[in-house]
Length: 153
Image (tube, rainbow, N blue to C red):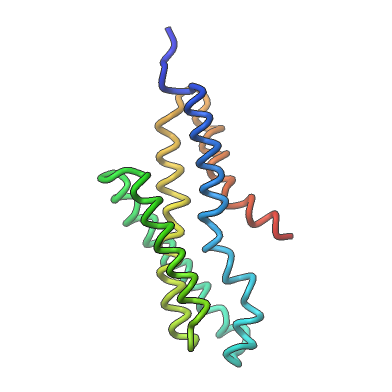
């Protein structure tokens, strides 16, 4: 007898949607790297100082994986994804209007925090849909981060 929920067609469809969400949602992790030369020129800073927003993004990402992971356990992945999408849209809008490196760095902390929704918590959620192909499913879900990074080269 086969399990109707695990490793089903619906599970694979959800995995495809997860890959798409991961690819789009993890743009917050890489966007600041792409614009780093423009940030350096805009604020008249050195390359090292222009890396501060990326550092803040990664700190926010680490904190977000922990905090949002707990929220997903309590409220579900769907609510977390919608909240993160709204927060990321607002964060990118504010980042585009940042008057200083300090403000941009603070906004990047928030962007990193909500970008985490598309990584750890989403991958953990995928693991519940598969039994026989769990390793492949988790690998595909994790690929959402690297798909975006590779497509830019």
